[in-house]
Length: 443
Ligand code: SAH
Image (cartoon, rainbow, N blue to C red; front, side, top):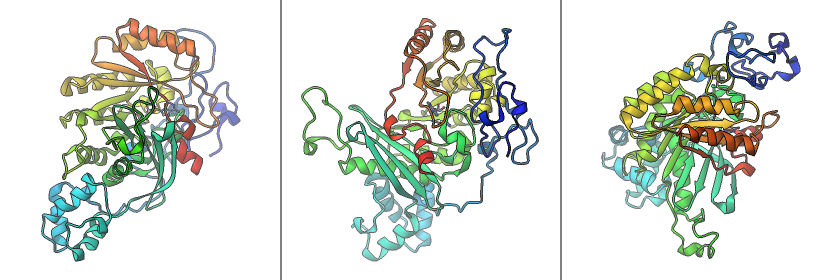
């Protein structure tokens, strides 16, 4: 679609790049460097309402492809996998194959406890049953297209190809005291946040529960095979020899890879259950060590609260004021800052879990001292923690991370409001660690 520069004061057509699916400008103009309501010249923030028609929707209509579930092209549903099913469903599926139902539990132990889908590694199953069971219930859903490592092998990023050709990413990060896996919940994303590489490409499709779980099982297998070194003791005295290191296990999951998890609610919830149910039903990871990160889909946050799980909710706020957030997180036009925060406080009230507020610090866009004060005043007194993420610039973007002094001042002001804050460690930058960047570079 040709960009119509006239709709955006201060920008020429060449400066506007549209998200192919949603019509959202990928490079909005810098936000006004002043408090909302203050007078003064300067470019207007771009809004979805002023975006030209996209996908047949009238200008002004808010397009949330991840929510409406419309995909770019028809895609084949991935084949059924035991990780899609609760144990009762697995027993029924095994019985359909003419096998005793208890084989469901044996197969599940292999997949969730030993991280294998290989029939020849299942010696407790009769020889003639192994192949048909594995073929029917453990199809290989993801193929590693590229694997990259950094930080001495303790950060591993995998670019996966699904059976229908979509690309998704997962990252494993081993620390002295934990192993965190960052997983994708969708191929692409429909939320169109302009600073995010995944947001630029639009949504391809939702991942199935098993496609999400398979990313974690693959990481668990890597650890079990002692492929990921233990970083403990690195600085002092060096690492113990590989043979004496503990292999480690996946302890934490963050839904911070590609996609908006709450726009793929049922499959993500299924994945949370599979990841956290004890073996053989699932992998036995603690619910408290699972974080679901969202742009702020308010009804889905309320639904998640009602599940009475102990998972942590992360909210990608990125701006404390609607004027700027409308641009940085376009779904804000549907659910504004106050509604999103109310839903978050209600989630914290129901679950007792501290809310994590994600805030990518972007130089001269959202890192002003007054925005830190506004954010601090909105959050103060709540069960909350702020995670500041230095922006990882996407290729071709004019935006970059904040100056160190501005970042320090932002932290200081939040702390002055009594709001706990950390600056996220930025592992994996040299391997396109930021959301969607590896898939973008492989396209
Ligand atoms: N859709 C979910 C998960 C997305 S990725 C969500 O928005 O929460 C996890 C976090 O990384 C989000 O807070 C997202 O806004 C942030 N992010 C995406 N691209 C980034 C970039 N280039 N630099 C820094 N943070 C980024």
